[in-house]
Length: 400
Ligand SMILES: Cc1ncc(COP(=O)(O)O)c(C=O)c1O
Image (cartoon, rainbow, N blue to C red; front, side, top):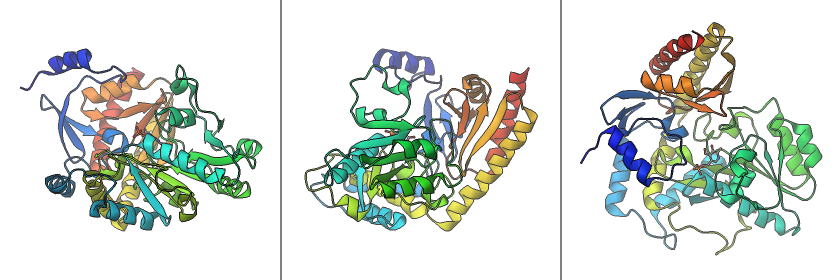
């Protein structure tokens, strides 16, 4: 029986581990860039399940592919081949120009697999070549290894002892990285564009210089594109924007348009370090998830689709910059590319997010003071205008 929102909140309070600071709505269904709560109220969704619903909600071909696959085979085991998984791996390898793909169920698992592979690869040359360098303010996941890779103490406190061998440098600071690297460096792992930490893009030739240092020290370059990949930057892989190729790239979030999946893709040379039994998963890359991924992989890489992301993203960024002119005391910077955009505020953003929600727009605040926009990639300029109208009204109230 359908319950009221208050009843659902209460049931949730009784049964669900309260690790999320939730907003007071019960979402029920979606269509394109809109979602509806259980009272029928409509919201423009500029969060997209945190960069997940790249094709929007209830996208016909995705719904059909999932329903068809569910009717045939939801799951078997990775002990057997499936057409859907072979297809998805083949597409990722061709898109990336790398060698082999592996599927897990989440971003954290993708990164966990990448870290394992990097360590195994490096240990072939030197058992002490184990240092993994990541960036401050990065986000790589919530498992013990990936929260250690995450360069933010707030995610690590209380979970020690943490795995050894992780060091941190400020993102975009090539000199700090150069100082820390040596022949003992196993890998440098970076978000191509930092998302959770506040939407930071790489400066000038930073990623090229990182690549050069990795080559110098025979260290692997791992790009975490869990948030910035799958077309979000206007290129299928964000690293294509910066003309730098990693040895391993990780994906998740948008890869199957909302069905849980994660993946790491490595060069053949690196992938060879894993032998049968070195890694595995029960669910990862099952036919249901891969059938969904195949729809995304047949849609997002198309030139026209990516051109749309670039065009709407540029339009959106221009609108945010124009808004910044009107609220210089509240908004100090607009960052990002494509449809991963951030606005630096001079105060915490949660109130603004709440007020936008009341007015029918779902937006997000990250790193306390950064409004983050990571909407479905199918949003239109008219929908950008709609959200900008709501934001303008809310900011004018904030300014008093
Ligand atoms: C860049 C990045 N890496 C890893 C993760 C972890 O992904 P998941 O929550 O699917 O484990 C996230 C999630 O926000 C992310 O943004």
